[in-house]
Image 1 (cartoon, one colour):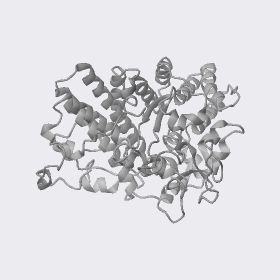
Image 2: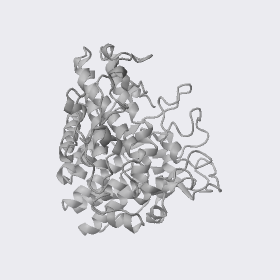
Image 3: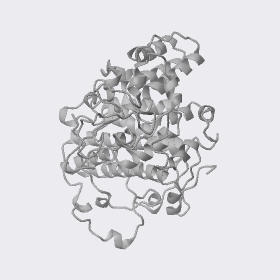
Image 4: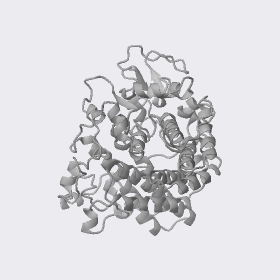
Length: 488
């Protein structure tokens, strides 16, 4: 059941105008004097318990936003990796090849879209965290909503710090000139804030919700994201502790890997956090996502971008059930009995984004498809990686083999730490391929982005392309307060 609706509170509701992290063209006094049409005035909002719920629901709604769930996200995180390439028709959006080749510049608009989308989520979270404590309401609900906002803010900052390195760190609506036009904060300070937010959220969030609140952040979601953050910090003991804690919460692998990514399989026993999406006829755009549509078979379901590479296909072992559930081949017949166009422009598409044609298209193709961000399989793989780094080989093998066995594969038996590390990294690639967009960032944290991506013919520059450039329009808006990453 998909229950979190996008009771979206538009940015015009909120006071304050950001420059470097603004979603407005300018901070003109006459603009601020214009009353929003058909929307709540800012001074009338954050007065009731319902307002608090709407404010936090707006943060969730932003997760479906095109800038951070669809084209910009898929291009920056999938196409830059060895898992995906541009796809679609050759003449459509040719600039996407710049990301595949690492020839993009700081003026490319997808960089700005991605930045703006995530800072919009941070702005919504900061507004909620700043104002909800002043509302007279049920105290337990108030504390839970604040914890949800901290979890969501941490998610956005984790995405930004991996993508751009040092980024402006704002934890409340801007009050001073420095906060309106902030400098970049060293990434380790950003990571400290992420860890603080997730630790505080995990202490408050419930392990589960009733049917009307499925999709909200849980204790398991906060602990899993915290484990992932610690993974990127190479804090192996913390990763092991946190993943053990998550394993004690009752999650389990869904027996059929293919069903994990079907609409009927959403929010299942393996799901830890999904972005909820649903078609609302007559209100298209409010609660659905274009994540699947951008990747759907060109000319049949969607736009056909971010298609699997041949290298990804060849990485699967024979009889790995995940390959058939990950790669949708031109001309094949799906388990739902639907034939994929044998004349489609591309040989392969993302099967995790496949939504059968009989599902409602009132708002376009695949708009009901949830976006899986955290799954229990990833918990097991993080645990395996941490245990191996700590020399706990038996525990590492036990965790990774649970994932392999579900895929129909035999147990790994390798005990050499380096060989097992590489095997676990490969399992992570195949298990999470074309899903939440971790592959590029994984290669960077593993210290082998240049080696792997250059071998694919990409013009990856070591020491430069591990992060993306700060969008030039943000530097211009800041009057030079924001500085550019080296090499761009």
